[in-house]
Length: 298
Length: 318
Image (cartoon, rainbow over all chains, first blue to last red; front, side, top):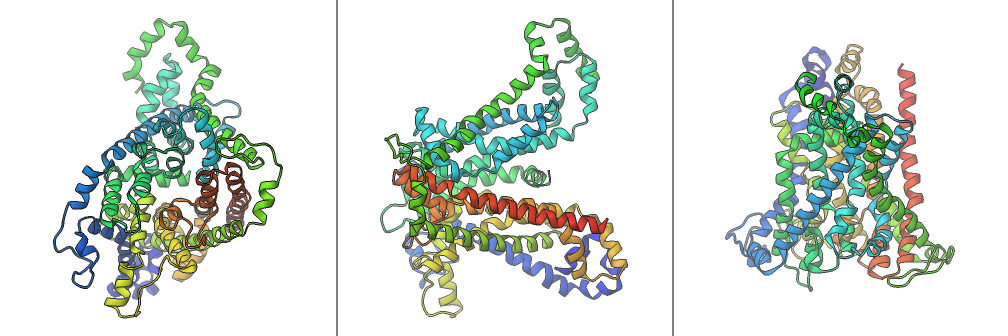
């Protein structure tokens, strides 16, 4: 804890009183040991999820004969059951469509909105920005009951289109907020030059601002994709039929049956359902971290 | 930049159609740009918010349009022990989980602020619990909390011999409540840690150098530099965290569904049970609306409580 603060600032040896603190053992005890514990605890549920999905049922239910932390005879039975005996591929496909649809919709809407608020300055633009920001503070738990009646009114109940239209309510505020920050960092002079050269505003947006804001767009896009992949309460409330469910809802409502839980299949479903976001995330880690921290710093 | 884009721009300028001119008319362009975002938010956020408050004052059920009943729903809630129970657990859940998340998350952020090999890899790994769909990691916790095959019980009973019987995580009220809180803290730590790490990295090293020259101890450097400098970002992250912990739904719904004996209902899960599963839309909406005062209070408290202290610190430092 203590040299945490000192370390990045200056060579700790510079100050005489910190010399004793910088010994290797101290560093091990104060940094690496707690860090190791954190990583172990944060990752253990995933390890447990993964190892359960490949364990045969006999091993799952017998800790006396088999060490539970390892698999003696790995099996693909749970995954095979999931892919061929349930509608799992269909759920994955629905989730993918919903995530891509709502991400595209909110990216378009929030790029335009952020551009209008940040670049086409008009009277009251800060208030519009504030209003959109406040929309982010309205949690879905308050909205899902009235939204269910709205969805029924529109005749979209039990349709994935309802989810594509509803998810932007929490994606647009976030993306707009993020993109306003990105647009701010692009020098205004570039646009002025283009204006002087006779470009229209839309041309400026398409040829100057957007190309420079590509990192921001990627950040907003992957964030939206993850958030819509993970969404649960709206999907639970608006989708009724088994075939149209998204992965998180379907696993909980379709795979959890009876009194004896099929832990192998449940964990395999969770693992497969987490993989797309995890892969997506690992490809864009830097954008992800910068968008998370950028949005907070804004 | 302007040179490379000049030719096509000049071309467009030579033949301006009325459409191009219309889109270059600033008020029209502003309206067009804001229309999609504002439209979506108005139809699917503002309107439902108002509708929800209206529903809370009616006796609507699924399939039947209700009539205005005034405060009847709320009067009923005030006499409903389940609602009081949910309020109690929501407050406990938010309080303990927020404290845990911030204590551990701040610690993790301080650890990550050191120099060591594979730092960015580690940072990426640590965010995983936050990336993976909550319901899916909640299922993993459900399996970890299994009464018979819990791996924690196995560790405590068969490996360490600390206990003689399996831990009953989800079978009785208080253990179930704390098990859920532990899962929530697990999921919240990465977000807090990575956000606070970003804040830590913006603190100028010269402040620490000056303090070390003045002979400040490590604790003093933390207490008088790190902590006050982190106040603004703490206020924002904590506001978010409190709002989304108080209105949490997924973890509880996935692991206990409010059981055992309705002891772990949060307001959101109770609203779902009454409103959607039970069909009493009016009553469910009333439960959801009853969250709003708590949220407003928590937001004002965390935001102004923390932000004001930051201004005071700022004044005395300047």
